[in-house]
Length: 374
Image: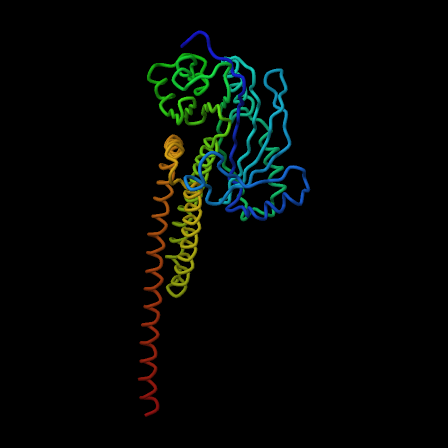
């Protein structure tokens, strides 16, 4: 790398934390609840700023909420961080802290990002996220449909540069700075293989922009200021979070299902048929609910013509292993569907047997009556 590293004139560190807070969020009601606060800053529906509406768009635009700034202590320095929230229809609340990183040497910019991770990252135990989440949940409680008891979390960290001291194209930028310490968070040198893995997911649309993705961090260089890349990463993280939630939900449901089936099989024949039918309806409802939410999550971002953002979105989903978690959910759903079909057939067979017994009984009664009253 060139020893004369560039100076970051305009940049920021953005820390995300996503929470699964409900089965569904009524965004229309949430918007009305925010309006009732009579605050100077209005909530607005999220939209992509650089992609054409026909090329990529939110199917159901999320609700973006400005929150009061918070103080983040980095070392001995207190820094004001812009705070915001985003609510997705499928039950995810995303919180964000944006910390200015202007007029910094590149090494100091990297240090700032790593310091933010230590301060508000997943291993920090910071209470900032909980306070912000409590504020959001308190404000929008009435808009939450079936709030979740135990909330899963996902986090992500992004270093954003809008301008260096000298204009740089993507190729020159990668020659002059080492992105690995920023993207890996490691201070010790990595092996060549590890470095290739860290820098594997690189994207540029113009000659002077650059996006590099990893599992939990990203670097974005966008001189034009507006970028939809962060929105795309946001949705990818939300999809991962929802798939993890339903994977755990079904993991808990399967043992319960087997216990209920066993208990139903031990019931008296006349009662068992009804219990089989009731359990089958319960499982059918569960499968229908999970399938409906999966469709909402999978279709949250509609991509048609924007190949560049589509590539970033697909790469983010691959990095986050969304497909693997989704396949796990599908396997569990398949087990429940098979059990539902078996229960339905068992209930139908039970009802048929009961009907046959009733018919035989009526025939016997009719024969008896013929002999009793000739």
